[in-house]
Length: 483
Image (cartoon, rainbow, N blue to C red; front, side, top):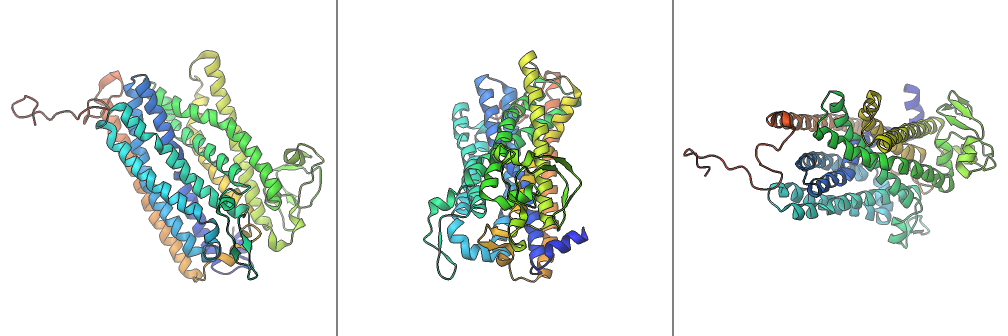
């Protein structure tokens, strides 16, 4: 570990390492919440629609409870998202100062979407016992669109950093003649956006379904747990094979538009054809590879559907313009782990689909339910690996082939940044601890409410007779029901 840190920090400003570590920590923490923020509104409204369509109070109860979780998650996301937005300016002033006019529109779109989503969540929560069912549902329909618009802004900014377009450089090297349309819709925007959105759908689906899979393993096999599992898991199962195809497509886009990043992802050292595929393994500074499983010619076949496909190697560019051996290994392991998790999730989705198609029921095997319970955590890990692949594989560039990370970093002393890093860790431990405590408190309250309904299955909380309609009147002293 010590040698890795030294290698990452070599020939770089002293403040670069703590700035990177701080940004990586806050981004990795925030991204845990992103799938729920982007996809949970859609899954909640899907359950809501089912409740209205089939007059199913259990479905409406699940939708109402998920909307409460959605609101709490959004509140925590406000904190972690705000920290990230400040860090862009505080840690990377060179990036924002020089390039902010070109790609900053993405952050503006995300900010407006964030504000709109907050208003819509408030309206949706308020409407449960106060609006007519169809009116309430229709008012919730813009929520997924607002979440997707926020993702649009962030992915537009990130894809621009990977394939910068929409500007010219003057004699001093500053961007001029900015074309916002080209800056937003860069070559990598489409592949990144749809890969990201589908990843959020399947991750949120597996996370939500995993909660009810655990309950199923513990013997809670009522309509409430069956429905709570089936709807989000079906969303995830449908999205998983789509995501596998999109992942394969975006890897080829990287091969064509960011060949050096692709070389890091596949730890390819020399440019050549008939390149082997390494499953894991470690790249050394001299270009040798140790460990891992070597599959002859597979990398060329995957990149261009032919063993004759030429794959660019890391040694094709100067050492200052490519990830070092440690960074390439990190990107490679993250990419391979993401692919392995995705492949296992495809098998899980196929298992679910096959049993449903043949028997019209949920799988009975405990191994299926154990796998389903773990799928949420695995999919979150895959999301984290995707971002590691994207960001580490682009090194040393913060704007690909236009600005190095070292050129963008703040001039603040490294000691100050390490102190900031420590404080952020303390704050995030408190924030996520509070988030978990609130979720556990909500779960306990809901279980108590369900227990009060007896053996007939979960019912509505005591403050309302139905998900729609007035609160129960408080009995008066005279017993006539008037307040």
